[in-house]
Amino acid sequence: MYGAPNQRNSKKMMMLGSGELGKEVVIEAQRMGIETIAVDRYEGAPAMQVAHRFEVIDMLDGDQLRGVVENEQPDYIVPEIEAIATDTLLKLEKEGYHVIPTAYATQLTMDREGIRRLASEKLNLPTAKYEFANSLEELKEAVQTIGLPCVIKPIMSSSGKGQSLCRTESEIEDSWQEALGSGRGNSTRVIVEEFIHFDSEITLLTVKASNGTFFCPPIGHRQEGGDYIQSWQPHAMSEEHVQQAETISQQITDEIGGYGVFGVELFITSNGVYFSEVSPRPHDTGMVTMMTQELSEFALHVRAILGLPIEDIQLVSPGSSYAVKSTVESHDYTISGMEKALAVPHTQVRIFGKPSATIGRRMAVVLGTGETAETACKQAETAASYLNVVTDYDPES
Image (cartoon, rainbow, N blue to C red; front, top):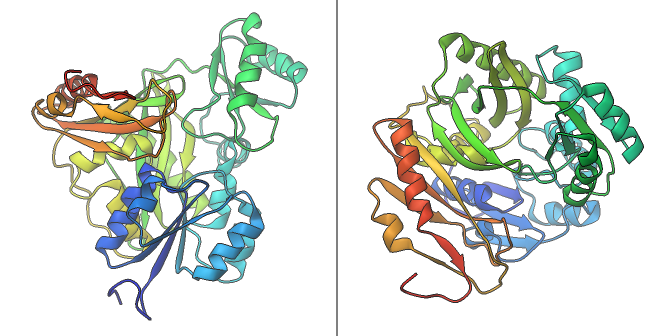
């Protein structure tokens, strides 16, 4: 039964992590009459601005996490980020709380080692060769084993932070420092991956629902410094590659379990499709679905979480998203250029409302549609070029 929030029989959804993706999940949940609580480590996070209530805690502190859960008694606990006390989530789940998709999924995908070993060593999915290292000396040995160039990443990070392409032996120490400085938690363990010469990299949004598994049309994306800059849907692929991608995605999500949207990242190569990573939640590259699909990834996530059926996923129009990043640091910023950006046909701008800007932080996204994905990419990129994060607003800028 679904009704209104803040009533005796209302259903409660608690977001652990309240960024721009969590904000869209909260909005979709409220459309279903769900009472929402946004939790994050800082006040004013995007999802807090639209949720019914919010809490500020250190989500890596198990006692603080347990306290807010026991106080609110949510029907659904929905992690949006990796940096959460997963041991506490496991205990809460055993006590009867419903973690989305499961506490096991959150713990498994929190670090790259667990998910990579599951994919490669248990499921025998095609992946890049990899090694792990706990020190600079071990990293040098791992690089020798994998070969150059290679990709070096922290075991735990988000949005590509700490990831670097190491091309020469002289770059190993810089890659080590980058991984240590940008990873989450106190771990000094890194993963070294073979550099896959891919034709493209995609996100296959995979929806696990009460009535089966569904796939969104493939989303292509472009990254800079390990972080997504632009995505488009649909991404042109052969039917053979689409089938391989869906098979890999079904295998990994079946193993993880639970309901919801999973962002499965894959490399498309001349030798076939390789598994890269999976997130048990909506994916940043999937923001494009707010323009392209009848139901966005966020609407699909909420339906699946609630155990409601999913119909065939409809692509309404080809489209693209383009991230707007800050080049300044400020607690008092504005975004200029909206008039020019929205003069570009078939575009929308979503400003996230983050309380502060830091260099490289994603502050907004431009969405665009077109007759083809290529046209939509040009529209979104053009509109995004007019947007600037500024500290002193100049109406002529």
